[in-house]
Length: 214
Image (cartoon, rainbow, N blue to C red):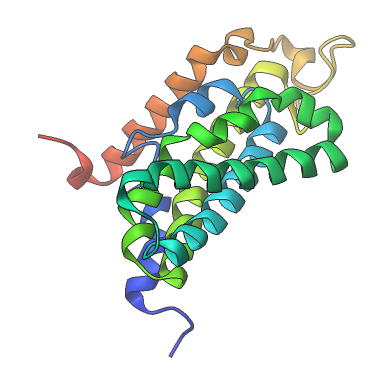
């Protein structure tokens, strides 16, 4: 018998594809538009949300029987705010330049619809272990989309990945630039993130017709 039952495995695997928070539930779109011009920022945001949602779901689950229903939203905001502060301080301590680039967007994790949605829809009604799996699964599904979008936007917009020139040097005209390739500056604009996400949604629904709404 494996560590995870089939039911528990679905909590992690479903949000990665057929119940993805961004492409299926259409949540967390704002950060996907704002911070995905660079792959590094996308990865850091993905890891940050995995930490906040995974731990946050466990905390809310442990407190679910003692939280008065009238103030549950306030309690949830306090929990997620505390976790976001931890993330922000760790980034400032170990990746200060990146923390400046992400700046306000790390703070906006507090208002991420995915986090508050999973607190309400799952953590308040389930035990800590299943809540942890649900948090990790949904945050990973969110993170995968951010990383895919960040990969294509940085590659096609700047010709780099994680800051490394992978297509050649546009100044000295090496690599692909030697044969006339030029970076697509439009990829660095926020609307292009929406177009990339739209393509992902189209591919996803083309592969699984059950996802197409009637």
